[in-house]
Length: 231
Length: 231
DNA sequence: AAGCATTCTGACCGAATGGTCAGGAAGTGG
DNA sequence: CCACTTCCTGACCATTCGGTCAGAATGCTT
Image (cartoon, rainbow over all chains, first blue to last red; front, side, top):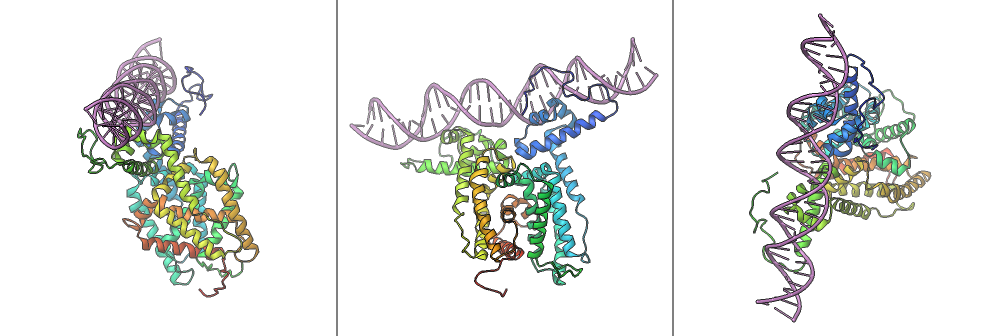
């Protein structure tokens, strides 16, 4: 983006890490910088389209240094995917038939929306991986994630049996929530272009979350267990 | 994927176009083959990640021939995007306040779903372009598409004013429909992995379409103008 | 200051990239 | 049969790719 890296200047180039700061603080900062840069570049161009050169430039380091830290392009990519899966798993606490459907679904939508908001690059990285046929995530999709979905689906079905919501297909419902929330990360460019915004504000995100919650809950005929007939 | 192209065999390699078939029939077939192959490769790997070599191999032609037909990688890509925009525009007939909201919204969901189904590679190509920041489609998004969305949004608002549906934000509603339908093309790998299917059948697609229509229409409180209080 | 381990990077490598071009192959009209 | 145009492609080019490595720079311990 900025200048080419053909400038021979070596010392004091980035304004930081001047003198020795001992310990592994530089290391940690560099790693963080590389991971952030790589997430951006991989998300934008996909695995094949991303180049270590571009990642290195965005991280403000020589290419060799990126390889020194990360070993290989593939290793760097896998590490990013794993980091994203961890974030994903972090918000997937268990639910039970005894929980309130309205509360659970709203929390589901909200937390997924916040994941897209807090880690847009990671969300896009994940999307690019799936779009390309999920060469690195096949196993995860057909295993861990599948089990998670099926477990939730069973709970949804039981709620339907108890008359707490309409008997909709729970898997399609989960996909609906995923797609609707994921959209605001993956298609951010489109959303901004069409709405004429520069960025989505916190208020926008809150409004969208409310909209999605209302439409989806109403659409599935969710009746709150706490008997709140009004509203 | 298959064999490398280092086999020196020249004649009668592809089983077709043997003798002269006059006119531009070969040309047309080759162009079609190239466009189809390119759509797959670009969709899978993005603009940067796609290689002319891979496209040529999938089309069963030498790389030089691809460039002979298409001029350049960029030109080929733009041509694919334009073709996809044409398909898109084809299903965007105008609507009016006088139309029935339920009918229009269902037709909207259904036609968008069919677009994802009939042209999954094109849908993914579009997704990859947006994911990468829409470097080639910025103008389209901020112009043509934006106008189309705003026009529809006005109609939705008027429907709400007339009490034909809830006063939901029409733009978020359009995004909801787009994302939910687009999902089955873009995240096909994930959908198949989780549901344990090899492919989505026509029946699956019909079921999903019905599900989406039901949930979204109900979620927006759409009341059919033809007074169908039952169901 | 010396010794040693760690951290870093410029130079380099073979392979692959998009693109060019001279010239072969093939169809067409005389 | 010969010209002439159009269609096609192998060989080649500069550039960039991911990755290696020797050795410089730096930090830590004594």
